[in-house]
Image 1 (cartoon, one colour):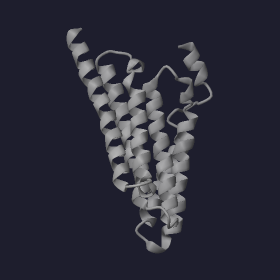
Image 2 (image 1 turned 90 degrees about the vertical axis):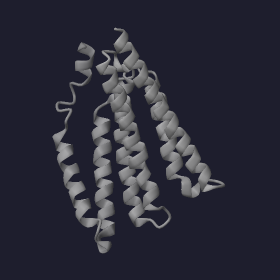
Image 3 (image 1 turned 120 degrees about the vertical axis):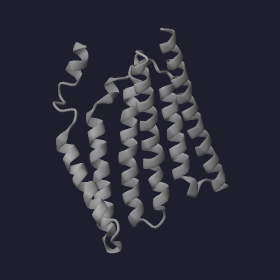
Length: 194
């Protein structure tokens, strides 16, 4: 525990209000600018800025020090997906060769999928009074979500049929959530047996 405290000593406020406040302002500005066709370049810049702030915030958590905690690393990866997805969405607003819907899957599939699995697995492990770091399926599930997000985002450029990309994304997504279901069932059984 002393090692953990020492490692986080450089980050005084893990909530990081100095980054969260600007991110909220950028999200509000994007909400105002997005509906205005003439303001698309400004909206793109604001959305990219929000994505960058989220990435900086996630990097400042220094989760690479928590290699024994896949549950925390999964949360960090989810936030990195969110920042990356926002940057890609901003770029898609001003670039003609990428559709906004493809970039949006970085947020919907990558970020929300990763965060959902990580939070549910962590909370269920804590509910069952088990160490969340021992949930071995979480890293695999997070990896499958990444495959699903990348396949869905690249569907427009997928070699061959676009449907192949959709099936790869759907299969990876289903595999990730099957691992989560397995964890939920296993922890429920362990709690009942205790």
